[in-house]
Length: 228
Image 1 (spheres, one colour):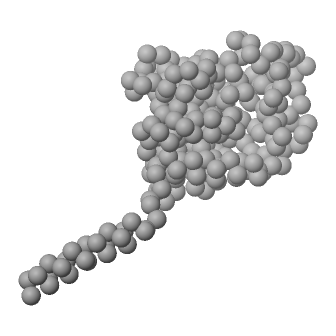
Image 2: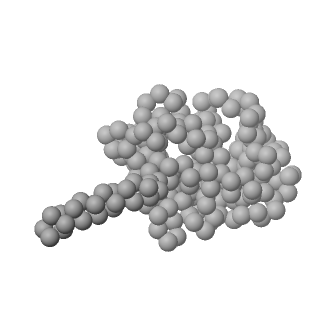
Image 3: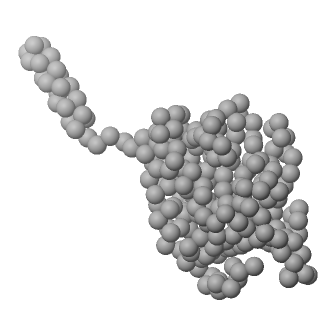
């Protein structure tokens, strides 16, 4: 009788192990991050135009250094208008994704005054060194897909809540693509746009935090609105 019980237990364990091994594996955090990125880009590409406000905090040696407030206006086919409210109230920047030049209108009360700069000109880069065309949401999504290898292989995290998804990953810096940095991203499940992007060095010191709010999807902006 005892031998029968032992045999039954062994068989049961073997069967349990066989069933367990045939169950689909839980997706890794890296897979979940990439799946979320695919969802985001599919939504963004289906949008005709959108508006969102942004506050960007730049850090020096881990301490807050500068704070920018601006509004992004985006039109399908990569037309972008950026209006600053801090620290350069009234300054407006116009560019099209892929173009080598951008236009700056520095005075709201003198709309005929405008300047043209190379997209690489350091005068129109962010305090962290980004080109202006590296600050829009599609540029960040391209950055995610360029770093799939690091997202899959390095330590990462993924949390899904009722109204938002949060994930963290390591990737090459999105200015020069040389050194690894850590990123944390918050995504609204209402519209699948990022609401917050945090960038840290490997020591955990903040480099840059971008907060996006008041998204307006498909406001039907006129083409002329994006002409300087």
